[in-house]
Image (tube, rainbow over the protein chains, first blue to last red):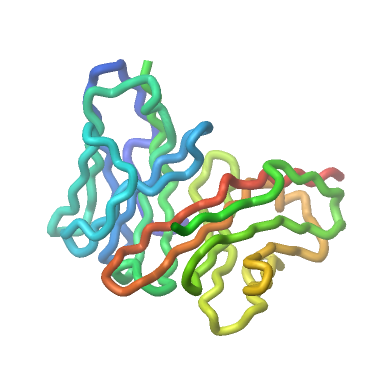
Length: 115
Length: 116
């Protein structure tokens, strides 16, 4: 158990809908990262928040947004869902701001299925 | 731009045999390199990381990796495979510059099968 929690574990929804994925980092970690894992794209970095502020951005679609709250938990919002958004979404956390070699601890993931 | 290439999407070994999973990186500056393991239906777990302190890095579960700058490689090895090593393995790189965040760039992954 990495100490990173993600809810829900599974999510099944329809095209055009909007969903929210939630992540709670390890106690004491200030950074939260979101990754998408799919068969065709592999593991892709989406976005990072550090202590409430956006720190780094990857190839995140405009339909996707995220935020980190004062208690440091984070939410990833996916809207106007398409079939191709079906994937495993991971949250990770680390102590620092991501620079250096701080290890990122991964949660168990949320499996999103868009029908 | 940084990238990571893992040679071989699937590697199969016999129990007790040497495990060798290959990773080559592309980076214009010295990188931080990681190997993660993903068991079925689970998240990623860090096996080991290279931070320039030593070129031979020992990790958990008997795995180790050697950083070779001249070959831009960071191959993962284990002398004797166990059935429990069957999983997917990911090599990843991060530039780690101050104030530039912690974007991990992953290779495509190598699925390791262990035959009895």
